[in-house]
Length: 368
Image 1 (cartoon, rainbow, N blue to C red):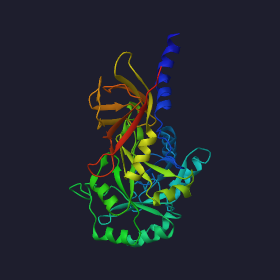
Image 2: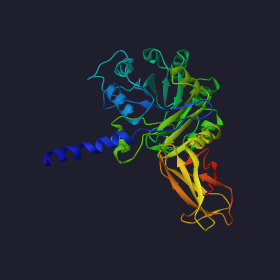
Image 3: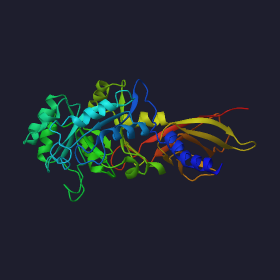
Image 4: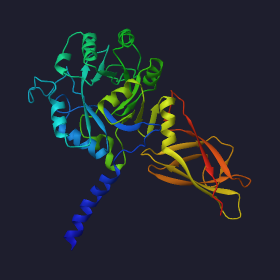
């Protein structure tokens, strides 16, 4: 009996983890699926520590819809132990392993250069071997000729930018003006850059968030204790490579990084409206205090600041709505009303450097 109990105690945490770790965000109406994408990852075929099948397994555990294994083209520290003259091999192994699984694998690679232009991911490529070119701009042109979507990786990386501030060089301006560079990471690994966000918005680049994982996702992002990998939420017309590429080109993305949602107003506001909604509302008997339910349909914990005319009975002006759950708010309405509108600033959503969007929730009163 004791032995069986011990086995149950060992297994139970794993069951709980498998049920709760999947990243969940609602679809955005009208007509767009919200696909969870991690488009910057490494394996032992460049400077990562795992085989490609591990990246597939991690993504399935996390509920990720789309991944790209973006091995460094020019940096191959394991080449003596894992010689692979065909630089498409990592993708091929992952693709084969995932063939019966609900996961899209996009073919990609990391063009790895000193600054400028630094590092960039080219995804939707056909043959990585053809990107082995000395001239960096020629490498970008070759990737574009293969139909690639290219985004600038960690432009604030202190090993290439000692002050940690992302800024455009003349070469980047050339790449953008020629249509060779399409996106930029505002969040990579454990870092976020508001300067990169400003560059994205000033130059019509797609906002990206990625894990850039080299080791194990669980270790770096503390998944067992509630952490999450950075991802790009892509709003696509359907669940295909073609639709994902179209959405990236149209800049329909939001980055999710350390519980912050980062994106342009046009993309972030519909997502917030899908994530947060008003629920039941009724007055406490013989009072003018309204008990109102706020529902959260997403994996993000929302931090809301009260911007309305009302004050609250149990809460300060700062409230938190837990992920995939709901909370009750007691609103002092001063008089009995049939509906109440409350405006919140969403403090863990970012639409521009230093800017947070507002969301309006209307509570319709249930009459006994």
